[in-house]
Every structure is written in C-alpha cells, then in structure tokens.
Image (cartoon, rainbow over all chains, first blue to last red; front, side):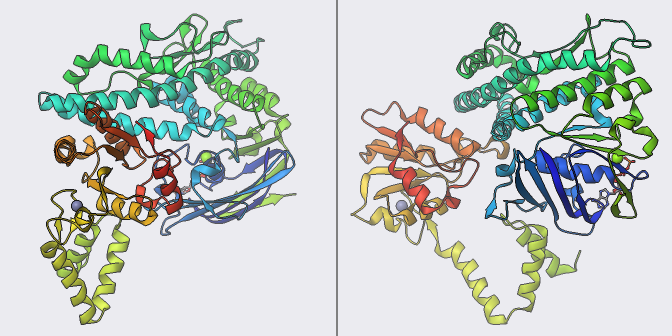
Length: 389
Length: 198
Ligand SMILES: Nc1ncnc2c1ncn2[C@@H]1O[C@H](COP(=O)(O)OP(=O)(O)OP(=O)(O)O)[C@@H](O)[C@H]1O
Ligand SMILES: [Mg+2]
Ligand SMILES: [Zn+2]
C-alpha cells in the first residue's frame, strides 16, 4: 500500500500541511526542529492511533488550539481509502472513512499499516522489557486490529486487580475481598490468555524473519565483527513451567487460548499469598519479555552499539516482512535513522528497503541518505513543506 | 483563575461527571448572563432533587416515594428482576418496551480503583429480595465494560446456589467498552430478548 495524500491541521507544529506523495522513496529534508518527525508521526497515528513519541494525545495538538485533524488517502491494491481523524484531548476522538458517517477511531485501524524506524528503536534492544512488550503488542495490533481491544481490556483488568490486591493486603483480607479477587482472577486469565496467545503466535511467525533480517543487515564482510553470529528472538513468559511446550516457536503448535487460560489460573493460585503479601500482580503477559539473543549471549548488556543497532533494524525489517507476508505491504518510514548508523549499516539498510512499495525518509542533511533512496524530495522549513523538482 | 463566587461555581460544575474545565467555564458564564428566573428555576430543581427524591426501598431506583412506580405496579412481573448499575440504565431498558419485570439498581459496579466492593453496592439487598420475593429469574444487565463484566461474574457466582433461580445475562451484541445507556433501543431490545443462561 502507499499513502497518496497526507493533510494535517493543527497537528504538532503544523497549522496546515498538505503533501501529495507517490510510491517509491520520498525524502523529507529540513533542519532540526522544522517538523519532519511531526509529519511522519501523524502518519503513524493514522496507522496505530498513537504516537511513537508520547503516550497521551495532548502534545499532538498544536499549542493554543483545541483539536488536530489528520487526513490520509491510502491506496491499497488499486483502491483508495480516505481516513480522517480528529484528535481532541479531553473529549472523544472522532474518525471517518471515505467521508462516511462518524466511526469509532478503532474502526479505522487496519486502513493504513506502517513500519516506523526511529532513533528511539535502540531502546527495544537495550531498554526494559516494557519496550519490547510494546513492540510486540503494536505489531500484533497492526496485524490483527481486534487486539487493540484485547490489550485495553487486559490493562484495565490488571489495574483493577492491582488496586484490589493493594487494599486487600492492607485490610488483612476479608472473605468478601477474596471472593471478588477470584472474579478478577478469572477475567485477568481470560483477557491475559487472549493477549498471550496472540503474542506467542506472533513471535512464532516473527522469529525466523528476525534471524534472517539480522543476517542480512550484519552481512559478513570486512568490519562486520564476529562472523556467523545468529540472532534469535524468543518469547519469555511469566508462566514458567506451566507454559506448554513449543508455544511461540516457529515449528511448535499454535497457542490454544483455553490451555493458556487454565495455565494462568493455576499460576495465579500458586502465587496468591505472595501477591497479597506484596500487593502486586505477579503473573500475566504484563510481566513477559521478548528475549533477544545474539550468538550465545543476551543482546541486552552484551551486544556492542553497532550490533544493537543491527538487531533493532532487524526487528523492524522483520515486522515489515511479516506484515507484507500476511496482507498488504506496509509503508516504511525511516525517521532520522541514517544519521545514527555507520556507513556500512546505512548502505545495507538502504539496499534492503529500496524495493519497498513506499518509503518515507526524513533527514536533516540530504548527504545522510544513501543514493538508492533518492526518489522524490520535499523540503521542510518555516512551517511549510514543498516538493523539490 | 477568576475571583470568588465565579471560580467557586466553575469548580463545583467541574466536579460533575462529564463536565471538563472548559465546559464548566462555559456553563458558569452562561448562568452569569442568564435571566434571574431561569437561574431560580434551576436552583429549585437542584434543591428539590435532594429534598424531594428518595431511593426506592425495594429496588434502589430514584423515586418520589418510599416505593417507586415500577415496584408498585401490579402489572409488572415480580418474579422477574433485571439488575442494573444505575437509575439511568432503568430508563434505557424501559425505552425498549421489551421488559415487563422489575428492577434492582446496584448503585454502581465493582471498581477496586475507586474503592467499590460488594459492600458498597446494593448486593445484600438483592440477595434478601430473592430470598423473600419468590424471584425466579434474574437478568444481569450491567454495563458491557470491564467493571460491569466483573460485577456480572460476581453476581452469577453468588446467585448460582439459589435453588430454582435462573440467572441470565444480556445477549452479546452490545458494543463492548460502553455504557448501557448509550446502546440504541433496537440493540438493547435484541440483547434483552436474546438473553442467555449465565
Ligand atoms: N503541540 C505542539 N504545538 C506546537 N509546536 C510543537 C508541538 N509539538 C512539538 N512542536 C514543535 O515541533 C518541533 C519539533 O518538530 P520535529 O520533531 O518534527 O522536528 P524534526 O524536523 O524532526 O527535527 P530533528 O531533525 O531534530 O529530528 C519543535 O520545535 C517543537 O517545539
Ligand atoms: Mg525528527
Ligand atoms: Zn422500586
């Protein structure tokens, strides 16, 4: 798929922006702070209903205004779809497809798929498990939008159960509290199993792509470091022993939600006293991690800076391949990543994405962008963006 | 910040559900500019809602007397009780004209984050009522969201030990994550007639 037209109103620094885009590579060039990332962030918002930089909507609305509007015309398999979103913090966001009746924002998920490479990606490799959970869950939603609901339901139940655990611990657990705790256990297990099954199957499908993409990015040659190091991604769940054999692996069985629900309930019963003691929820997908291994060692804490970058790129490339494989090819967005990479990785990345249906690249200096990606060019300055012929 | 009474009014309005700081400000200035009679009428309505309205002893719905009109209406089937979270949900279900039984208003849903457990809801009253009023069917119509679902599960477990009592839930099809009151009449009516055993 590709984005044919992007229009912003009062989004971030943009009072107004209007870009007509074409398939193939497009480079957006402008000095620091001119608003390049803001442009691609808007596109990411259409795809995910969230920003890769902030967790709330408020910063997305231009200072001094009440609401932001993003319009994107997306061409997919010859059909064009117009997505319109109105972001109004403190009120309900609104959405529309093809100028039809107002829809819930959730209903436009899936109209546009993007894979965004950003300087922050390094934290997927070096950061806390939360960064990697977010990576998996975002990809899960991109692949199957119904998981947006599963994810929010699970988070809500988790919060409620956490509050109950805290108060029960303090109140020395009345029998009424225990009775409601069992109710929340049941709901946590149900939504948790749903989310967990989605993640396990996702990782099972993604892992081979990660290994392959890493080998491609870090292709052996001079300066490539220890040759033949294999990258692997594995799901590490808080279920421990109760996790059925082979779940989350390429050749293992698909995850069975009911089996996982039973396993979660069993684990919850096992740690019940500990949970009441500490007042925190100790079991469930919110405790899990995507383990990244390079050769023999975990990437986190062991991989070099360059290796960590290769792995981060591999995760994004793998996402791109996975999404392409089971549906429409996503739009690639490379926000300022070339400035972060050494020459060899730059060249490899450019080679690997040059053939994509659409690639949007932002850069402060055009020299950072490899020749393979010099397609259309826009300049960004003083609140304006225009095509350079 | 405005001075004295205006800011006090904005603050009070802002504490109402669904009223953000911007709306609070707008309402306050609207009232400031309004005719005295209009403000007096609002004032009277506010006063009488506290003095003149009580909660029905039996079902917990808002009422002008100790028993509400539905609980006093002999044409309404007393053996059939629909459990809802709030009085506004009673209105929503009444609008469907599908339901001929009576109600039980819980006064909320299980919500540990706000410190609401079974003891803060009218759960004990429900249990007593089932024991004495020869209730044979309870329809649980809590909101289709996290808290409403948990409350429903809790009630199903609690009520399953009553001999001869059938406990049903609204059929699915209600938009998840919402409020009962926002479901349109058609959808709610269908959910009511297609209720399933819990
Ligand atoms: N809500 C907002 N309202 C107005 N301006 C905003 C808002 N949010 C961000 N900005 C401004 O947008 C600018 C940042 O834009 P952006 O991150 O897109 O820059 P960039 O072109 O990507 O720069 P760099 O090359 O450094 O990455 C900052 O000057 C910031 O003050
Ligand atoms: Mg930027
Ligand atoms: Zn009554």
